[in-house]
Length: 70
Image (cartoon, rainbow, N blue to C red; front, top):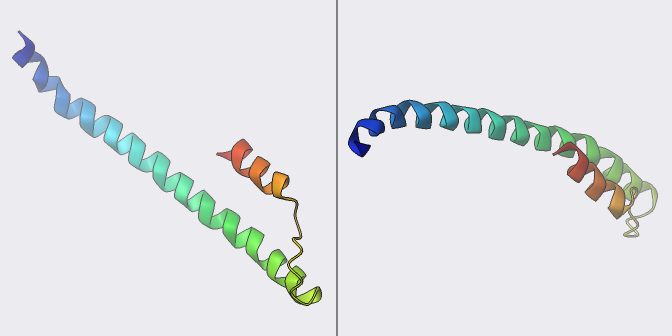
């Protein structure tokens, strides 16, 4: 009886595997986009402040942004 149910396993794995692949691909593209937008202001801020180590954005803002949008 249990062997007969394995015929549905391939379709289930392919469906959920494709969905997981699309979700991961979208998340990776979002990370690239976010880093592309966050990096230039930090570089410009560092240049303007003579590389003092001060950050342009607060740490809680960056962590909250990652938490809210992922």
